[in-house]
Structure formats: structure tokens, C-alpha cells
Length: 386
Image (cartoon, rainbow, N blue to C red):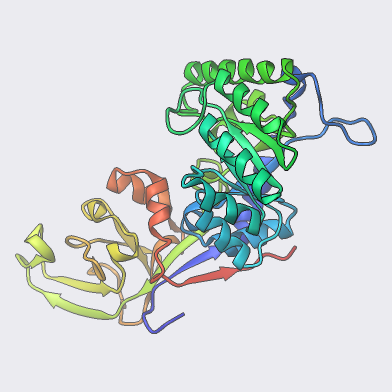
């Protein structure tokens, strides 16, 4: 940690507990789709594995440390958004399989990096499939690919019939392993729409099976679908938000803490911060905290937000600035320079969660957490015993 007394504390034990909660909900759903169940030597059916999504620097929590911790817990799959993120994980010593969930364009450069760093690619178009076959044949290089099926997200991915074309192409390339086929839910809260996506996905899977294409791994479920739709579990689930505690029933892993660096008394009627949007209604004691929107705090939360000092709520006073935030500590006896201020986390009997901040700011909790990935915010890891 540096000189500025502001840091993000990551409780890896919370990540462990969130993983356990997810795993306790898993059920195999492969048999009904492809009639090719995965079975252990004893004959019992395998439960799905976990592909931990650690893109966007582990949703702001630090991709390398989180992935390393999960690997020690037995997780062997990790999902990232780009080749750069995959290379970064490898450079931090992360083993296991890494799937690039984003586009593989520009093709040849991405294929070369994937081969070098042992990264599995998402193949989402017939053109990408053709280019990959040419690359693998010319370089005599083995590469793993997961075919992405479009079922309703309209982001990247091929429709079922095009997935069949891609599968046929890749099947003819001895150096390419069709490691997986997957899709992505657009709104797992909507059962009717999600069921429609699953129907489309299953149709595509049956189409592949009827043409002799048997992917090793089938996957569809994100965090929400993992909890709501056991029929979507297949061979892998891809949790992200639940692992970090951003969903109800899961434990937030991140605590954002800082310290009071300045105190001042101001009379009633004093405007505070940029644009003078807040004015004191009484003689007030204001504390300045060295944390702001440059650290990921949403500016729009100031009207409803507070921090915790000595176990009590200290309302935010005025617009959050890039580097500093003012809090009203008038009612907190003994508040002084150097006292810890909890921005996210627990203090005494009070708790502030990432979801509280996202509600105050009327923004997505995904966006909030990813904002804490800024390099200027030091991260301190509390390690769990394994």
C-alpha cells in the first residue's frame, strides 16, 4: 500500500464461500440434450465444472490473485474478454484453461497469441472458422476453439445453421480441437425469453450431434442462470458476479476503506464541493476522505450515500470529486484525522454493500465493481486457509 490511506480489501475467504454456494446448486443437464452423459469411472454422472469469469480485472477485484486462489480451490477454467487479458493471466502464473470470451478479430494475430499462450478461442463466425483452419494448417499449430451460438443476445455468435458450418470446417482440421460450444443469456431474469434461448441452443446442439460433431464441453449459464435454470448447467457454468458477492444471497468480497485526512467546522449555509449542490443546514463538522470517482465511486451517489465512521453513518456532503469526498461527521463524537472510514464493508453493526452504492447511484453493480479495478486503488488480499 502507498502513502495515500485508501485501499480495496479483498476477502478471498468470501470468494471461497461464494464458490461453495454455487457448487451446491449444480446439477448435470447434458444427458437430455446430447444423450452423451459424462460419467466417472464409478458410473456416477459428473456435475458441471466451474468456469470462473475473471474478465475486467476480476470485476475490479484483481484477476490474477482471484484466479490463483480459485485454482488452488480446484477451479480449472477461467474466462476473460480478450487476448490481452489471457496473456496477463498467464504472465501472473495462472494455470488451467483460459477461454477468450470476446471476438478473435484481428484473426491471425489472435491465433498466434492463442497458440503461444495456450488460450482457447471463441469462434463466432464462418469467416473466423475458415481463417483459423488456414492458420492451423500453415503453422502446424494445435489450437482449441469454442463455437459461440447466437440465441438472443445479438452480440457475437453464429446462428445454429452457421454453427454447423463452422463445426464441419473445424472437424476437418486435425490441428483444431472443438473444445466447446456455448451461448449467453441476454436476460436470465426473464424466464420466458431465457427458455426460448435454451430451446434455440438445444436445437443447435442436436443439429451438431446429428452431423457427428460432439463438443467436449457445452455451456450456457452465467451467475443468474446457474441459480434459476438447472437445465442450463450442462458441462460448465460461467459465474462472475456471484463469485464476487454482487448478487443476493452471496457475500461481497470487496471492502473499500480510507481514512479521514482533514477536518473543518463550517457555519450553516455553507456550500460544499463543486457546483455548490449541497449546503449545510447547521454548523457542521466535515471530514475530507482521500477517495473519489477516480477510484470508482459513482458521482451520482452523493445525494443518498454515506460512509461509516466509528460504526455510524456519515452522509456524503456535496458532489464526489475525482480524488476526495466530504462526509458530514457532526453527529459522530470523537471523529478525528486518521480515523478509518468504511466506504464499502462493515463497521460496528452497520454494513454498506456494493449493491447499496449501485442503488444510490442508480447504476449497474457490474459497472460499479469494475470501476474499482483502477491501478491507482491498491488492493490488499485477506487469504483464506485452504
